[in-house]
Picture 1 (cartoon, helix red, strand yellow):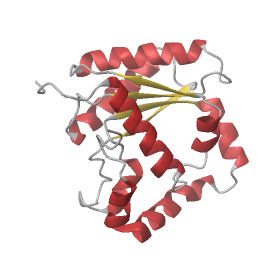
Picture 2 (tube, helix red, strand yellow):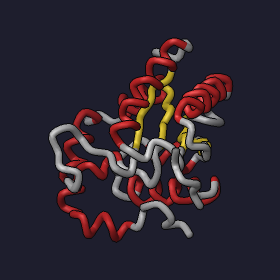
Picture 3 (cartoon, one colour):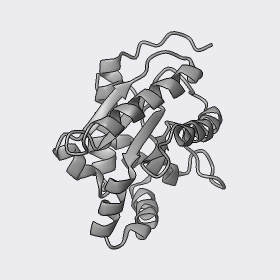
Picture 4 (cartoon, rainbow, N blue to C red):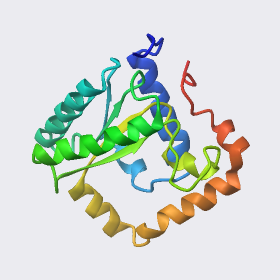
Length: 190
């Protein structure tokens, strides 16, 4: 069991907003993020317990809420879990289970799950490879996206398949010192 954390829901959300604004939008890692951020269509939810099984239930509750609220009001949800799944490989296994549960609950074709983790590591890379930072957030984070919104965003961005490669190049040019200077880790918003 995890030790109690000093991370509050407010701090987890503030750190995540800081990461989104400075890294994701600031570096243009996701060209689709700025519009929903500016329009206030991102819902931030924080799950503080350390129970991963209950985290799936929280994810399903957020998926149901996203399903029932119009995209103009809430286009996407970030579920931040600062006190659970600290190990990236456990988190990665959890993502597979979460995707299966979302599909069983009828969200396949409607919602997509993306994931971010402070220790994210692409297969075949070293842990300190700067390109891993494209998927690193201050805390384990589950991102629910509407597939319709993704389709529209991809249509509006003709080179969507090139985003990944450009992100790798940006981070390699930025380097570890440049990433650290963004100050987007846990507790940065204190």
